[in-house]
Amino acid sequence: MSNVPVHTLNNGTNFPAIGLGTWPLDDADAERAVTEALRLGYRLVDTATNYRNEAGVGLGVARSGVPREEVVVTTKLPGRHHGYEETLASFEESRRRLGLDYVDLYLIHWPLPRVDKYVDSWRAMIKLREDGLVRSIGVSNFTREHIERLEKETGVLPSVNQIELHPYFPQEELRAFHAAKGIVTESWSPLGRGSDLLDDPVVAGIAEAHGVTPGQVVLRWHTQLGAVPIPKSSDPGRQRENLDVFGFELDPGQLRAIADREHRRQGGDPATHEEF
Ligand SMILES: NC(=O)c1ccc[n+]([C@@H]2O[C@H](COP(=O)([O-])OP(=O)(O)OC[C@H]3O[C@@H](n4cnc5c(N)ncnc54)[C@H](OP(=O)(O)O)[C@@H]3O)[C@@H](O)[C@H]2O)c1
Image (cartoon, rainbow, N blue to C red; front, top):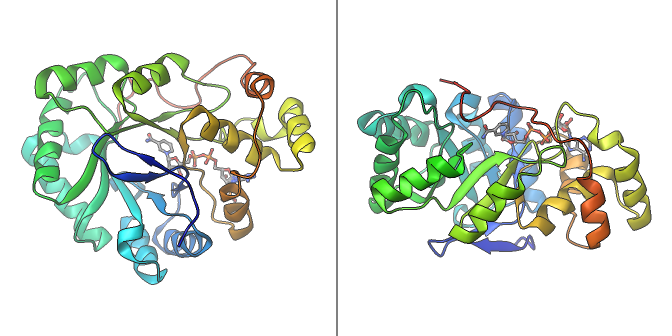
């Protein structure tokens, strides 16, 4: 059993409060990282068709010895497969690569508004959930406008929106919108990959005050915002460290200080980013 706290999604499903990212691991490294992480107590794993490691992730789940029903496996629909039939076919390929009977959470990876097929894909995701092949459906990199369109045209809200979120890009408005709609916010690049966040003196000072590491401070910041971070690490020591963030509490001043910096994205803008 794992003692990671859980959120309840808007369809009544349990969703762990922290997970493991797997980009840019290849199949062999993903298998090792997922096996190790599940044995340490992780119960949420994030992959995508475009990470090209679904087979490794599936083997990691199978070899970990953790009962399948305890693990939340997430994968994502790539841009080149937007469209109703294309989504159904793409999902089937993902499910086969993962070697699973069902996928726990299926996300549209990017909205690609210029392609303008994400509503068709969403209808296919609803069908996959109705057919029991997917437990929960969600989106990634969607803005408020994209989500409102899904709701208006299908009446079905996502359970999760996985977005770029870290102290350099705290996304207050989108998080507030999610909270109002009962959508769980999942944070990608939660440690601000590629930035100097973990060397930041403010984060270091707060870490010292709590006797934890800078990475733990940043991950705790996410969980106290109510967001679900999915830090990637292939190192068992850092995986263990990243999971161990529920035993201390940041105070309101510390929460503010962590994100009190010039805000900027590290990744693409959902309004324009195209990834197929
Ligand atoms: N939906 C999307 O469009 C999207 C986009 C980007 C990412 N993602 C997902 O989000 C996951 C996480 O994002 P990310 O990989 O971009 O960035 P991240 O998790 O913020 O950072 C990962 C980097 O931090 C290092 N690291 C991990 N734990 C650490 C610690 N405690 N102290 C110091 N360094 C640490 C890792 O190295 P080691 O492995 O050596 O520990 C790795 O280089 C991805 O793996 C992927 O699953 C989704």
